[in-house]
Image 1 (tube, rainbow, N blue to C red):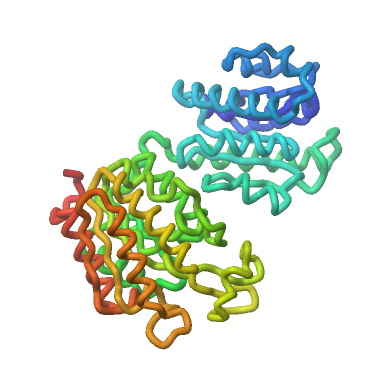
Image 2 (cartoon, rainbow, N blue to C red):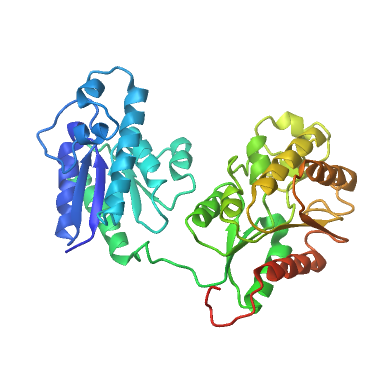
Amino acid sequence: MGKKIVILGTMDTKGEQLQLLREKIVSRGQEAVLMDLSMAGGSRFKADISPGEIVGLLGKKIEELTSSKDRLTVTNIMSAGALQKALELLSGNSLHGIVALGGSTMALIGSRVMSKLPFGIPKVIATPAAMPVYVSTWFGATDLSIMQLIMEVAGTNDLVKNSIDQVAGAISGMVECAADHKVLKLPYPSIAVTEVGFSDQCAKYVEDSLQEKGYHVFPFHAQGTSDRAMDNLISQGFFDGVVEIVPAGLIEARFKGNRAADMTRLDAAGERGIPQVWAPCCFNITGAGPTRFNREKYVASGKVLQIDEMRAMARFPLDEMLVGAKLYAEKINQAKGPLKLIIPLKGWSSLDGPGSILHNPEEDARFVEELKRHLKKPVEIEEVDANLEELKTARAIVKSLDAMMGFRKKDGARP
């Protein structure tokens, strides 16, 4: 028997194409489970899971939806029902991969469902509506693939058939090669590390040193998506500790920076109680280039460090830094496991060291004072007389995490 691939689509508008996709997947030796998310009416093609069954999971009747003019509410109900059904199939070992075929609404529903499925399950959205403004929303922090179809999914002309063939081949091939997500594990001890280009030297030393000590290191680029993906993996049980060289996605989210994660940033490691070591890279600086929201506020001081034609950096205004300090204190207060802060006294990145127009140790100290003021439990804070990018800081980070982990065994077994 092949692996089970769930197909999401609307049979009332794309029945012929979804039926073809199902046939192509089956011809490749897999099983196809077609979930019909039609919102307007019936179809001559029969699905394995009907729209009535989907909305019934939420206590609704399909007639309520097909007669409704409220497209937003209908879409939300269908999304919630599809997610519930997908999770039910997953728990019953009847979902090994998932593919959504259709326009922008189906891509949106598909992304909502896929974002709640575990890492490692193959996920594909095939759509002609892969516009940049939509794609970033669909991707979120999910390990999904988007196939851009160059024509409308209508009829079964040769171009449409060729595209559907490729969609079937993509999801079938991914499912064939994917490991069982239930047994997908990382070796002990595995450490997640956040970094950006302004922390390269620190990150390189930390990663190399941890590997020399027997740790398995997994770096994540803290640009707002990769660090959120890391949090998702932590919440799913991956990683035994984390080095947050760049936990700045939280303050970026609060003030709509280009590296914004979301307001749940840092929650996963705290909830699991795994050891954490934080450094303050980019707590004090933010993007001030042409794509920055409310850019005028960040260039008002005149102290802007231009990196290239698209990127420039400025300091967060002090009032925003103090708001950020309170946010980070709240995350620390909620953490269930050990957590330590390493605070360099000569700048928190390669951009704000002594001599830089972004260097302002007085404001950095105010941030630390404000953070301490809101802490409700003892937390070790080690100050280092160096810049973040100096070896002294990196060594303090490694030493701190190693002490927390207490890792001395070489056999790779969890304690």
